[in-house]
Length: 409
Image 1 (cartoon, rainbow, N blue to C red):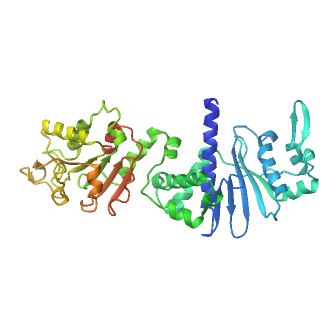
Image 2 (image 1 turned 180 degrees about the horizontal axis):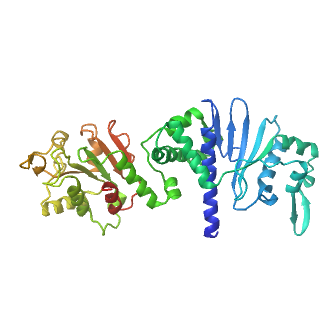
Image 3 (image 1 turned 60 degrees about the horizontal axis):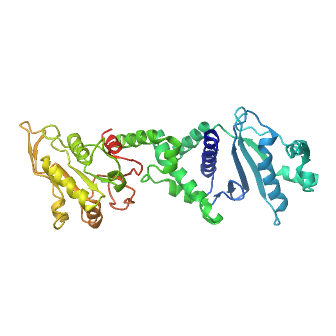
């Protein structure tokens, strides 16, 4: 498959996901539901009607018969072969570059037969004749079928975000990075389930699942927006929520995947020292500044070597004596500080940073004082670690340089 074809295919998937989100946002009653990848791409069931929707993002400039033949045949076959009474309405939601979004071209019997006509080895064939489908059946199908021209990709995505903004009375940033991201994750998670019952979601379930701000980004969101955009939005989120305010206590977890990768551009000890200079530099930081707590998910050898290097560099750290017998009571104590002559800044401090292993954190998380801000840069799910404070989950940074960029934005 060529890159252009692959890009078009991926765009088609996202277009379907966005359409699914739109359908969910348009539901009225809590019990109304959508099935992702049901009879067709999207099945919509309400108290009054049931629609099954095929979604196509086509690169053709104008509507042509061949572009819609296959999806219409699939719908026609379902209509013809359904044994039980069929109350479904069939919708083909298709985007063509130069067709007006929202318009519905008239598909009558003559036009339907034109669509069902094709050539095979230069021989004209008629699908309805081959399958012995009488005109009465075709007409009955047309009563339940409509073709709806869909919006352009980015126009539709903006429509989704605008609806989310209205629904949750939030900013553009929150609608995009919180709610759209959550909606995308929910729809994709449903789409990959094996059983149709597992791919169903009601309005009430969707509303509850989407209204969560803990999971900021997911892999599909990053593929859609690019890594650069992910880092930009992540930094913007930290800045807009004032999570990096020096007066807030912060626990920062650095994952094993980040520690074990190539960090030649910013080694671990340099990373820690740079953070100290940013948030707790003596004679520069205000008297109410708080030391950072860095948590490293690494083996004992790397942790010990990091602490040795900090000692060699005369960087005072506090680890609650985890190498001997960890004490939460001691670890929770604030540093003893001296202030500058004017009393505004910190001139001396008994330690400059807290540093422990991920294992120590998790084994003592119920007794370690909850921070104002918890930032997770690991693949581990630690969202339930502390019940209070701001929580940020950034699972897609690849090295310490990217982490540092977010933490100093």
